[in-house]
Every structure is written in C-alpha cells, then in structure tokens.
Image (cartoon, rainbow over the protein chains, first blue to last red):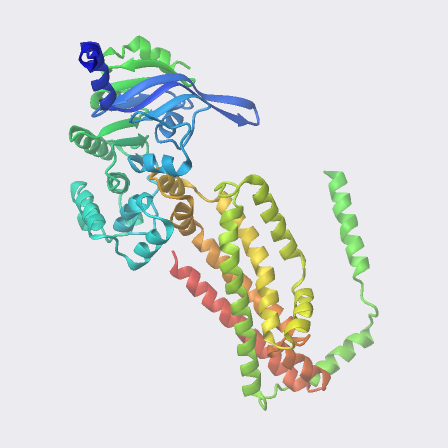
Length: 270
Length: 246
C-alpha cells in the first residue's frame, strides 16, 4: 500500500521537507505602541532550505530585523506559523524554544560583545545555551569548560583567523576583528542556521568584504545563512536568494539575477 | 513657567521658616566659638580605643553595604522591567517592597533590633543592610533598564537561560555603576553607623556620645578627626577600585 502511494511528487515533497531548515507560513508580527498597533510583518510565507545564502533587503523599518528574530524565535508571531525543522514553534515551552535557539547562531551589527572580556571568553559565551546557570558560572570563573568545548573554541578561532588574539581584550581589536569574534561566538554553537543582522553596516568597505567572504566560506561548507543587508549589490554578489521586504510584506523572493531595477525601485521608493 | 517659579520660591521660604533657629544673635555665635576652644588640642590618650572603635564602625558599614548589595543586586535583576524575568504584577510588588525598605529610616529599624539583639553593632549591620538592600535594588534596577541589552540579547539568541544571560550579558555592562553605588553606600554606611552608635550600636559613634556627655571635648575632637580620616580612606579606596575597572 505504501509502495502505491510513493509517487514522484511525494518523494520530491519529502526530500524538500528534510532539507527545510525553517519555514514561515502567513506570519504576522504586530506590536502595541503609543501610536497604536504597529505591524512589523504581514502575511510572510517562505521556506529556508539547507545550504542557502539568503539576503534580506529593504528600507529601514521594513521588518528585516523582526523577520530574523522570528526565525530564531526571539520574537513569536502574532499570526501564522513558524516551523523549525518541521517542528511548529507556537506551542513550544520556553525551554524547548531555547533548544531551537542553540542550533541558530546570530550575529549583530554592533557585535554585542563584552568589551572588557577577552576574545576567548566572548566566544565561550556562545556555549552557554548548552549549560545551566551554575555550570556556566563555574566554568567561566574557573576559566575552563569541557575538553570538547575548549577544542570547539580553538577550532572556530583558528577557522576565523583570530586564534592568536584569543587572550586580547575585545575593545583592543578593529571593527572587522570584533565582527569575526561575533561570528566565532555564533559558530561555536555548531549552528544549522546562521542569522546575521546587518553584519557589515558599521564597517568600512575592506572589512565589510572580509566579513562577507568569511560568511560565504561558511556557506560553502554547508551552513545555511540568512543575512540582513542594506546594500543590494552586496546582497546580489554573495547570496543564492534575495528576499525584499517593504512595510513588513515580501515584495520579492527569488534568485539575485531576477531582482530587476524596477523591483528595486519599488522596494526602496520613498 | 512663572507659576512654577512662584511655587518653588514659596516652598523654599516655607522650608526656611520651618527650620529657622530657636535663638540667634552675636552672643550665641561668640559662645559657640568659646565652646570650640575646649576641643583643642585633640587628645591622644585613648587613641587605641578610638581606632578600635573606628574599625567596628568601618566593619559595620562594610557588612551593611555588602549584605545590601548581595541581596539587592539579584532583586534588581528580578525587578528590571526590560529583562522581564518575573510576571508584571510580581515585579510591581517587588518594586513596592523596595519603597518600603527605603522609606523606613535606619535608626527606626536599629531601635527595634536593639530591643531584640541588645546593644552592639549587630543591630546596626542589619539596619544598614535592610536600608541598602532597598536603595541598591532600586538604583541598580533603573541602571539595568537604561543599559545596553545587546549582549544579553545575544546570549538569549544563543539559547542561554535568562539567569545566565543576565549575569554574563548584563552584569558586566552595569558593573561600573554597581561599584560606584556600592562605595557610595559604604561611605553613607560609615556615617549611618556613627549615627546608630549614638543610640547604642557601638563603634566610634558610641565613643563620641560618651565623650560628649562626659564633657571630654578633646576626646570628641579626636573622634571627629578619626571619622574624617576613615571616610577619606573609604573614598580613596573607592576611587582606586573604580579606576581599576575601566
């Protein structure tokens, strides 16, 4: 009976399902503010597949950051469904959502590192999702975690070319190096999905290229990446897919070459 | 604007009238100066006793500030509206508790505790801790709400529990403020401990009132000098400690 139902369409659907990392279905996010109810996202539906490098573009206030925060469940949608590896997140308890966040690395525009701490200490904090409070506190005070975790830290520091800076305070590094530390902190989680919220917005062109090259390298090794960018040319250069948002709605979702000047005009029109 | 100026002026005049001196005249001022002549020179006869008493005062202030911080800091995290670690109604109750802790003067708490524990510095330690707990929890909760939440959010995004994210993502952000508030409360605690000494809580305050009541004014001036030196030392350590954390 099962053999009869295994049509090529079903096999294709199953294959897609197993490659799917996150899917959003009719997702809406609204906030209560002094001006009333503000919609950050409206009817957003999309799927992120393994190994994709997706850039999210759009003007300020388009909902790019909210979209990223929906993907790792930092923001829960007001309407619609977010599924991570086929698991619907809506009805999960906070502890179960944390398990999903552990598999999702996130980097930010302003790095969000602790300036007075060393590179190694900052990277180790990426592992705090695996531990309870006392384990984290004890390991941090002792300056040592498990052998596997220490090796994981060494490995990402080497991969990102900042191993020799591991005992240097973060505030003594350049902006590009700090962003590498932030990437290392996310990578030490061994994530299946890396979310980058405007990772090059505060960097000069050289350092921005350096960070984007590093993200592409990680993507070529199989990591799924979703990256918010304000520069469309950078998005087209590095991504396998572009999603364009305006007023919280998806105006475009496709390969970079299909992003015509007309669509760009629509997305960024004042 | 004009109405506000009038109102503030009226308040100032009212406050001055309410606190005017009972008597004032040139003769009273001359009597005051004559009285101060009895204080000079400071006596060094009981210096060891005075120094030991000052150590008791310093210990009382140190314990009062430390216990206040040890309890007040975790409460500040729980009461922070931006970290939202507790449901809103519970947070509201907690913040109201801070108001109660701050509004009861240390001397009132100490008077009650002296009945329970008897004379000595222990009641002063508890009274100062009680007050500091409310003050530090309120001030640090406000600081947490104002500080950058970037690292806290980054740790939450990495799947860390809120307690871990608050400790490692937020505490380092506010640590300079924690140190500044702690040392300020320590300095305030030294003065509070002296005041509590006047009602029987030991330390240099008790020495001071004993010397004053027995007309040993040269000893009183020694007590005052030692108090000034102790506060100066606390201030010096405070500045050094805060500079070391840059």
